Amino acid sequence: MINLDYPNLLDLFPEHLDSNRTESASFLIWYLQNYYRLDPLEAIDSVCDKKGDKGIDGIYVNDNDMTITVFQAKISQSVDNTIGDSFLKKFYGTLSQFKDQESIQNLIDTGGDAEVVRLIKRLDISNKIETHDLQGIFISNIDIDSNGKAYLNTTSEITFIGKSQLIKNYISDKRTSPITKQVQFDISGFHASEYIVDKKTKAVIAPIKAQDLVQLDGISDQSLFIFNVRGPLGKTQVNKDIVKSIKDSNTHKLFPLFHNGITVICGKLENDKNKIEINDYYVVNGCQSLDSLYKNRNVLTDNLRILTKFIKMDVNSPLSEQVTRYSNNQNGVKPRDFQANNSIQIRLQNEFRKFYAGQYFFEIKRGQAEN
Image 1 (cartoon, rainbow, N blue to C red):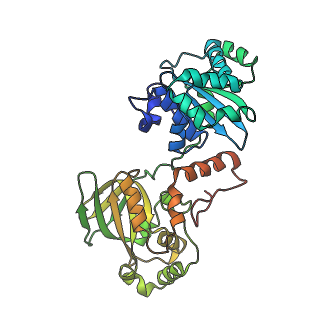
Image 2 (cartoon, rainbow, N blue to C red):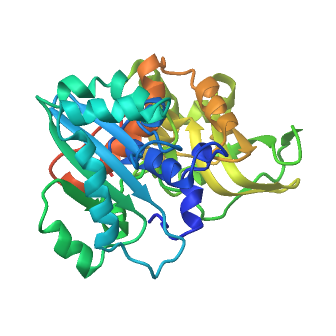
Image 3 (tube, one colour):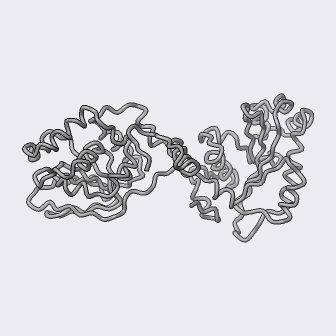
């Protein structure tokens, strides 16, 4: 759930807040990215909310739909306020500047060096106004009142999008959170290596019993691998070899010698000579191995241990993405695999889950199964 109340609203788009840009303009850029699915640069280029811009906050031309959309955005700092008809009537006057080529030319002639003039010219609005439908969208972080609704009934040119609609139609581009259940691994009698990068980042490597690893939450539904670039890939040659060694109890003690190990990123990591404790964790490398171990958990023995690297760091940091990228080296990783963590792909998958659950599933990484 997103929080559109001020000032919490500003936390949604900190990257767009700038001393040379109004908060409403930043809000509109966020809207264009999250609801119109524009990339950041295109969204920024569509906004012109600066001095002298004739009440126009942004313009977007969709040549496929043959539409020209003029935007007005307003942020209210009070959650008790509503949008009435006065704001909408003023916006209707703004739209009248686009009613025909003559009106647009007048806007250009009187606009001087205003950014809106450059935007109108770049989008070729003067020529397209004859072939495209004009529409106005008024966006706010508060809802509309009865007077505003009554006014909208008198005009088809304006669409109002307020707090309720923004919340209802929002599709996140974020993964679900890492698994928060605390887990403890017994390493009594074994040596663990610790590598400290800084106060916030460290790694611990130890041979962890496979029987303990398969008890981790999220293996069966793949939620343990939410940040991995692939899901289980099935019967690849690598996976067949892993299963073969799992089923041969004579090789269990040798497993760390020929297996690359598992990498776990976690928000919390504590260890001593007898145990390792983790929380807020997910697996970035070892999905194939854990899946094979889980499916063959009935043949696991105490001798089968996996060299496991636990890395404490911010699970949403660029560094964690780099670790994910560099640690995937068993089954060949293709360039398309790294798009599995692209925000556009994640949002599309979440959108399919919201609107087409049980009918369709949008796969964004190879081997991924519908949860």
